[in-house]
Length: 338
Image (cartoon, rainbow, N blue to C red; front, side, top):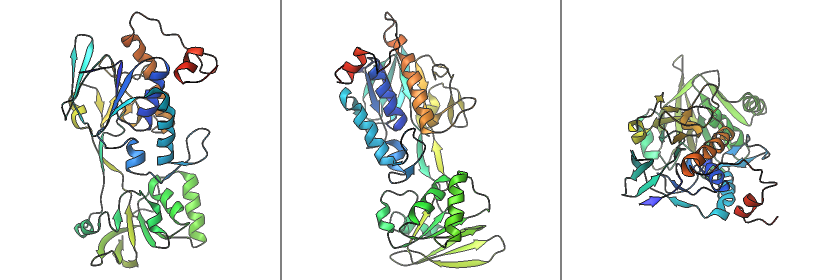
């Protein structure tokens, strides 16, 4: 049985920063993640995708953000349990007993769920013929953008991922951007950039079209797209990318007695605690009035949840807020000299 002050479920950016905040205030913590690597969605779905909304960081990729957060944690030697899916959470006296699918057990007064959108898989292209090209010529995330250099890439979708990758890959590829509607859901600034690149011929924009067929033997050679009027276009293409969002599955979390609203967990905005005392939810998996699904929001939520953990982990001590710029205790924990 592993005993710790707090157990974090999820090793994405929010979980990593929450671990940093726990260690900064002197609490022990361990991290469990179902994936075989640290980084969550940032690493699994868009390691190469540019991220523009991290304060004081003009631009970074999902991989760079993850590596920076891991480096921030190095002074603390946090224990990670990867490829471990939490199956059971039950109350025993004042602690939660947490068990994984591989038989690991944890005893802790605090459980912080930072599981992103839970277990996730991308929504896929409808034509069944697409399956034989998956992970060869058809992808639902980008892990190495270098493979698209000098190639023709057809991108499908109307949200931020589709728009961001259309802009990014237009620097090295011939890009078709295909969307079933004329309206896009992505950020206005990115949409303006797409329109600018369309005018200059860097992006071939096709709206009110959907994929109906893929052609090729060993590799993708062309695709057929159909518009609302039934007109079919054939596009020569080397790769097709689909960004239709994720199918979210909460998995075992759904059975833990939490208040769940549309596959997200309801929390208060003081401690980000759920309806179960000592269980918190931060990041994309939590919901409350005014919730913004931004990484920076997850950082804020994790910082408050970490400080709420202090009371249950150290019931006989009083938490005293300190700034890292002035506290000798905090500097020591970071391995810094005053």
